[in-house]
Every structure is written in C-alpha cells, then in structure tokens.
Amino acid sequence: MPRTGGRIEAVDLARGFALIGMMFTHIGPRWTGDNPPVGDMLAGGRAAPLFAMLAGVALTIVQRRDRGGAGSVRATWIRAVLLVLLGLALGSLDRVPVYIILAYYGVMIVIVLPFRRLSTASLFGLGAVWAVVAPIGLLWAQRQHETVHALQTEWSDLQHPGELFMEVVVWGIYPVGVWIAYVLVGMAIGRLDLHRIVVAWRLVTAGAALVALTLAAGLVAINRGVFDDRLEGGWRILFAGPSYPSQRPSWDELWLVGQHTSRPLGMLSTIGSAALVIGLCALLVRMPWSRIALMPVRAAGAMTLTLYTVHVLWSWRARVDYEDAHPGVFQPHDYGDWLVQVVALGAAATIWSLTIGKGPLEWLVRLVSVSAWPWVSSYLGRNEKSAPKGA
Image 1 (cartoon, rainbow, N blue to C red):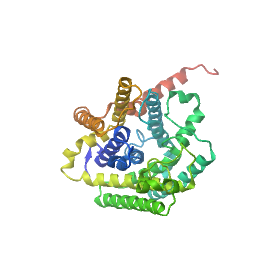
Image 2: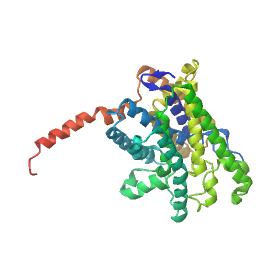
Image 3: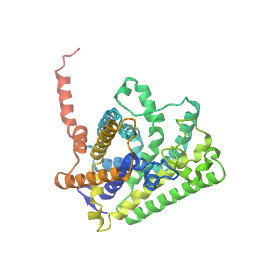
Image 4: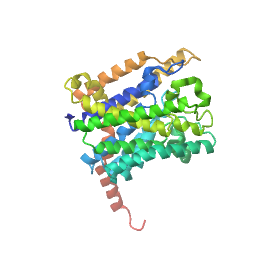
C-alpha cells in the first residue's frame, strides 16, 4: 500500500470518504417521505463513527512515528484543546445547520490516552465490550433522568462547565462515553499492517459480516414485533433514529440499528461498516488507477480539519442567506448542493496538496501543539528563574 510523504494513503482515503459522508448527512437529501434516500441509508449515522474510528487509527500511527512529538501526551492534549475551542466557536454561529463534532472529538482523543498501553487484542476486546455495555448504561440513564435536549456545544456553555461536560460525555448527539468504543477499535486497527493485502481483506470480511449480522438481528426484531409502536415503518426501522430526546426510550430500543442511536446493535453495526470502509480503502490504493481517480478524495482526507471547517462555514452562510431571502421557509436539502461542495472542496484540496502540502488548519495545529512548545517551555522556564524567591 503506497505511502506519500510519510502518510498512509488508505487512511487518508477513508478519512476523505468519511468527510464526504458527513457532508451528505448535513446538506444532502433527508428522509422526509415514505422511503429514506439511498445516500441517507449509506451515510446517515455511519460517516461520523467512521471519522471517530479513524481518530483512533491516527492516534496509534502518530504515536508510533513521532512518540516524542505529535504523538506525545502533551501534544495530544494541546491538539484536543484546540479542537474543543474550534468546535465551540463553530457551534456558536447563529443558525449553523450542522451538529459540530469537534468538541466531542477533542475530548475522545484525550480520554483514550491511558489505553494506548494495551495490546492490540485487548483494544479490540475492550472496544467490543464497550460498544455493548456503554449503550446499555446510556439507555438506562436516559430512562432514569429527565429529558435533556442537548443542542450545539458553544461558547456560552463554558459558563456551566459541569453541564457542558455531561452534554459532551452523556447527553449529546455524539456521546463520548459511548463513542470511545470507536476510538478504541480504531487504535487497534492502527496497530495492524494496513500495507498487507491479507489484513485489508480481513477488515473487509469482518466488517461486512458484522454489518450483515446486526442488520439481520434488527430485521428479526422487527418481524417478531419488538417495535410495536413502529411496525408501520417495516424494514425502514433499520435506518430510523432513537426516540430520545423527543420521548422516553424503551428497552426495546436495544435492538435499534439506525442513525446515531448509540445502542448496542447500532454501535456494532457502525464499527463493522467503518472497518469495511477502511479495508476497502486499503485495497483501492493498491490499484494503479486509484492514484489519479481518487486523488481528490485522498487529498481531502489529508486535510479534513480545514475542509470540515470550510464546509460548516459554507453551509451556515448558505442557510442564513436562504432563510433571509425566504422568511419562514426551511432551506431544502438536495444532491446539488452536496455535489457542488464535494467537487469544489476536492478540487481545492488537490491543488493545495500539490502546491503547498499540509492543510492550513492542520499546519497551525501542529505548529501550536508540537513546534511552538519548546519556545513556550523555554519562556516559562526563564520566567520561573527570574521570579523573586519567596514570592
């Protein structure tokens, strides 16, 4: 599997597909009629987990390559803080149409740091157990606690840090307490030799099997009448979201496989689909034609923080302009807007990577978390030495 400038192309390609999928869930056609759109079935509730799993892959890879630099605990903490701050800033935009994941992402990569000492098998095992046990605990908490309508994470939330912490870890759309499972499995996948074709095929096979088994289990639950209040949906229940926070969830929802359910079957299914995509990307980059045909996706995957931020700002500006021009009318979602952003951002990423290299926000985060630290440390050291004794 090819490398470029020290990067693993399969990881960049998978990250690019994750970004494209997240963009679709934000501005592409939504499920408003009798049948969910195909794109919504494929990407809805699966793109973000893929993004989270790739965070774990990246954590392992960067630690292996640069243990004392970008892979250090200090650099990871600084990077996490920067992600949280950027996430809060984007979430503070008025009428932003996207649930910003960056704050959750930043908290996740810090919480899993102690687990980097575990073996590969232990990471896989712990990730699988976490994906089953943590969702059960979340469902219990949702049943016991009064409904929490967690919206955007934004600057104003810092006035109540305890509530912000609970929103990010428990009540939010990307509950870190459950989603850690994705990062743990991703860390384990990062330990594998993704350059070996047998490893790629094992990921594809295991991922496809897990998706098939979880969907089959969901269909069995539907056919046995587990979801009595949703029976009119038929097979579509497989792609439906949870009832919380619009209503108190029932224990039957343990069988849900749909979007952002954070239920056991849903967690296992999205772990499977993420592993499947990573394995397929590891196979695709071995094919000569992919270097040209998929270069925009790989380039986008190498600078997802920058492009995600541009996508959020673009979508926010489009929504504000539309709603100001059409008061009282919600902005429609269609394939056109999504394709325009995908093509434009893919082309920009390709040109940028060929002419400049690292994305601007990626460069800035690395500069602050790694390159600037010796200067800061030296400055703090000088101040300590010059401070009056006994002060």
